[in-house]
Length: 168
Image 1 (cartoon, helix red, strand yellow):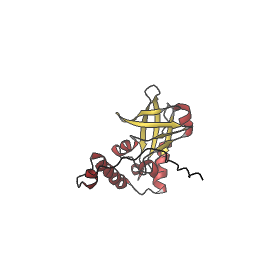
Image 2 (cartoon, rainbow, N blue to C red):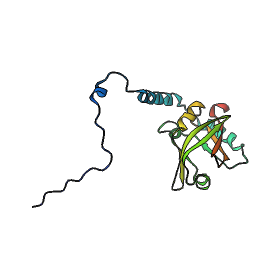
Image 3 (cartoon, rainbow, N blue to C red):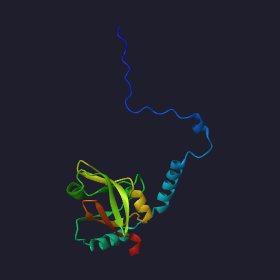
Image 4 (cartoon, rainbow, N blue to C red):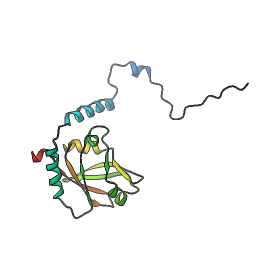
C-alpha cells in the first residue's frame, strides 16, 4: 500500500518573529506609526459631497481644454482612501503609457511628486506616491483633476484641480 503524498505549500516562508519584539511594549518602529497616521488622516479627509456640488466641479473642469493630450478624473473614495490607487482612462493608458511601470512625475503648480504608474494589459494605475500627492494638495472626493501630458520623455503630467468646495 502506497503512502499518501503530502503537498507542499508554495510561496514565501513566514519569518519567525523575534520573541523580544513581539513582547516588547515599545513601538514597533516608524512604519507602524506612519501607517496609523495614514488611516487617521485619510478618514479625517472624508467629506460628504452632494450631486449638485460634484456637478459644478465637473462643469468647471469641462471648460478647461488644454492643448496637450489630457484626461479628466472625478475623484471617488477608492482613489483616495481604500488603498489609494487611481485607475486612468484606458484610451490614454494605451496611447501614452504603454509599457510604463515606473515612477512618473505629477506636477501641481511648480512642485512635482513622484508617483508609481503601472501599466498592464491596456490599463494603467497610480499607486505609490499618489496618496502623498492628494494629501499635500488637499484633494478630496468629488474634486475633478485634469491631467495634461507635458512631457513624454521625462513623463510629466500637469494637474489642474477643480475642487468641489470652490463652487459651494
